[in-house]
Image 1 (spheres, rainbow, N blue to C red):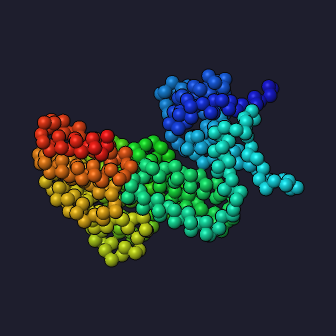
Image 2 (image 1 turned 45 degrees about the horizontal axis):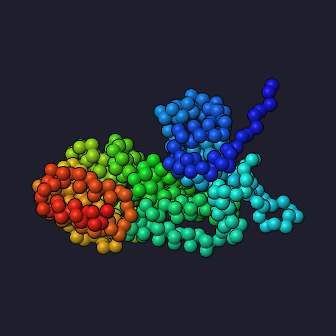
Length: 438
């Protein structure tokens, strides 16, 4: 019987190359596997063995006929090929973390374990040290948890005010740190750290969703679900499913959006009476029905959302903190947006306009999105001047936020103005657009 082949690691020159780093950043596994074959001499059959895949699946990925998205598979590939987790936007892998220091050693922390053949310089090892040194510096305490939770609250506030896209590096960095210290924390803190990691994963998913990077967002949302499943926090799971439903609506998958919203409702019902949560989830379902152009089902979901909201009046303190944003103003606006998705412009315009009038000025991304919806429904009714005026409000708000989702809506609205290119309101809007967006 032949001896097993030794585990081969990737050459440091490959890990440091811009082509490799770009492929990892994009999670382009077609290119990653091709480079592994060409630059490291590891052929598809060996890639399959190392990564726990079939050779045919590896062949399909290398030919560009199949991709990778599930977090478990990504981790298996990272471990099999010894790709540093940070390169793929994952938590650092167990083999990147130093083992316990043997007794008698003078050093408090052993040097990071480098894969055989790698050097201790270059971007890969630097990333490892950046995440390892905090682990060696301090113990995780209740004070640490309080500080991290405060950071999460601040991230959500900044997301409302300025968009989620620029928060991604900080949020993912915090998520990486928490998932690492979680493994070494005592039992008393481990559960709270896991809950915090789940919230950070949801926040990371939301930030990538706002950046219109839907595949990456889905990976983090899936990670949040996995972490919350261990906690048996069913309301949090319903929240993550609702985020995934909204993303599926944006991503042109309304049937999937509806299934996710309905699943979220089932999960929430198992907890007991949660009228505010159910009101929000029924509205998510309404969005999906509207995108499917099922007017009857959409109106029924809106009615259920309104009825649940009425039952929630005076009981806001009983609802989870994450759903309290869904107030009467949000109910009004979202009802208008659902009707706008159905094409019922005369009914949706006054609702969106009233909601926008009521909305807090600090919620700048939300106001920008809602100003776009108002402009869109006004344009549908032939109110060109009003539509361009509303769109200019969206533009002004977008000047202080970084949200590709908002920018995408604005560009979509601009494309719809093409038939009116010679009209004065459109010329004025285009000039304003050049000033703001370049």
